Image (tube, rainbow, N blue to C red; front, side, top):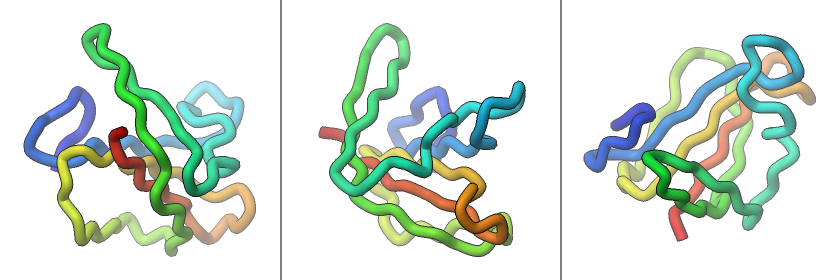
Length: 94
């Protein structure tokens, strides 16, 4: 498992608040859908990812991954739609 900056031994996991506040990194993350794309830029290299999974889960501080593919990015934030849930996305590098 990895956190940013990129570690080639596992997926990248980015978790943050959503919204317009000072502590919010994601603004409209929950609006993403399967097959939407996003980009990550690190060390002047831009990588494109496509959303392959979107799921809501309880706010329990845990996220169990069955696939530890190094070319994945997991985006995680609190749901604005259901305050008791978190929403996470899995992006596959393309």
